[in-house]
Image (tube, rainbow over all chains, first blue to last red; front, side):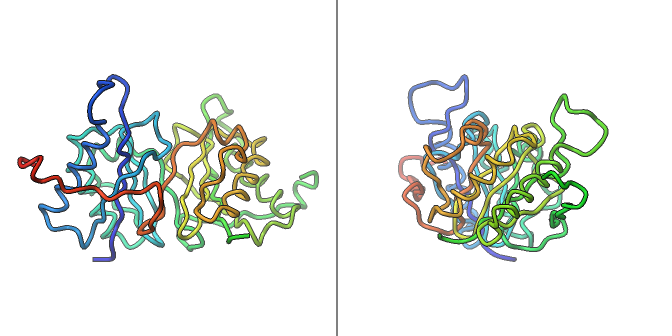
Length: 141
Length: 141
């Protein structure tokens, strides 16, 4: 129990091959995830919201999980049937102190469709390092 | 002048086709960006750091820009010669109140290689919407 995670789903995502008419699969995914959060009474752990675009169109449907001071993740290649996996991942993210859920606890669909992660700005973390100046080694830079 | 942006560069990124030996191009990109920040005395606006992986390996070299309460961006398809474009984008990110730099002010290389953006958790923004329950419309969900 280490905080609330924001799950943001692109509501305009329409993967290649999806019908060009009707509700975008991204919007359906968002509604499905929202309904699961409500049914499981997870509102205290997961905030769901929609966005017009996550700039990950080539990997649609896309969604992000984020929380202050934690690693954020962008997941792509989703369809509305992946709402359960997405909510499970958001819950694991909420439980992880640094926002990095243990690999084995991530649903397979999420593992295979992680687009990127973003480290928390300004924070220290074992994964992060300072960049040495190395000016003496590279005098021409 | 609206805050400091964290620019995180993957130091292990080695794009397809790059030599399998020697310093990874990601590490060289990080050093080059760090050197530009130092030369232009931008340390007050941009913090540079390295990470072992941004989980964006299929789009390497990859980097992220982020700041508390702002949209974060992941950029891919970079090589060490893109350090200038990356630092310029980080500066535009630092200047943007919400972390969304005006499209025309983003270097072309960055525009064409944006992997994803992540909205700030918990924040309000014109791009973000609540997801309606719509339980009456979808009683089976």
